[in-house]
Image 1 (tube, rainbow over the protein chains, first blue to last red):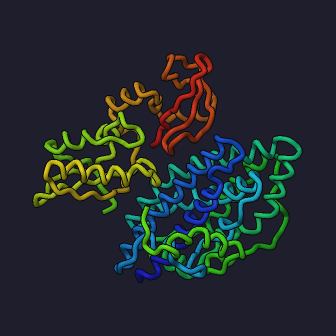
Image 2 (cartoon, each protein chain N blue to C red):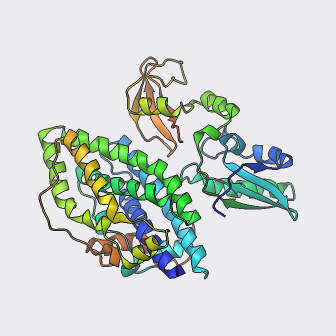
Length: 251
Length: 167
C-alpha cells in the first residue's frame, strides 16, 4: 500500500474528529448551562486529542517537513475529507446533540473495528479513542432520551433536527477508493457492514426517546471526496485565521 | 514509537521522576499517575516515554517540558516521547496516588462496575471527600478536566470532583 493512500485514508477519519471538535469548541462559553458547556468542550478536547495523534502519524508518514499544525491549519477546503454531517453548523442544543449522537454511534463502531487494524499506530489510536467515545455516546444518548421524551417543545425540536440531519448519515458508510485500498490491506475498516448495527443502535435509543427515523430515501454526500457544504468555508476561515495571518505562530 | 508493552523504568531515575507533578493535580507525581512507561539512560541521554491519560490531555505537553527541565537541572539531557499503547487506565494510579487524590479533595476512581453505577446515578457509592458521606449525587458526567466528573454531597452540600474509572 502506498503511503499516499494511507494518508488519505487517515484524513477520512481524522478530519471528522477535527471538524466536529471545532464545532464543539465554538460552543465554549455558550452552552445552555455550565455542565453541558463543560461536557461539550471536554468532548471537543478528546476529539482534538485524537486528531493530533492521527496527524502526528501522517506527518511521520509524509517524511517531509510537514507538522501536525500544517496539516490541521494549512490545507485547502477540498483537501479535507470529513463527512458533511460534522461540518453542519451549531443551531439549538437539540440540534447539536443530534449531530453528536449520529456521529458518536458511528465513531464507536468504527473504532471498535479499527482497533484490529494491522497498522500498529492506527490500532493504538483506536483503542485509546474507544474509551473516550463510549463516554461521548453515553452522554449524547442520554440527552436524546431526555429531549425526545421531555416536553412537547423539546420533542418537536429534536425530531426536527433528526429530520434535517438524517440525510447526512448515509455518507458515513460510503467507501472511497482509498477506503477500499486500506481495507484490502487489512489497515482500514469496511464501513458498509457497520450500517446495520448503526441503525439498530439508533432505533433502540429512539424507541426510548419516542422519536422516529424519517422516511426519506434521499441522502446527501460529498465531504469524503472533498466536496463540502457552504458551511465549511466559514468554519475553515475561523479555524485557519491565526496561522494564515501569522504563519508559524505558537502559543 | 507507539507501543510500549511493559513498564520499564531504571530505578536510579525514579527520584527525579517523582519530583515532577501533574500541573492540573499538583499533589500527584507523574510516577503515582502511572503515565511514565519507560525511562532508561542510553548513551548519556535519558529516554523517557509517557502515555496520555486522555488523548487531548493538555497536561501532557507541560509534563514533557517539566521532565526535560528536571533532568537538565541534574545536568542530564533528556528526550521525551509519547506512547499510545497499551492505553492508560486508572488502575495504574498507585495506592499512594489514590490517597493523595482523596486528601486533595478528589474522590479516587471506583472499580469499573461501581463506576458505571455511580455515573448513571443508579447507586450512591461515591464518598464525599469533605465529610465522608455517601449521600452524594452526580451533577455532571464531565468535570473541570476530561478525567473527572462533578459530584455534590447531599449531606454537607459541598461539590467535589470524582476521578472517573478508565479501563
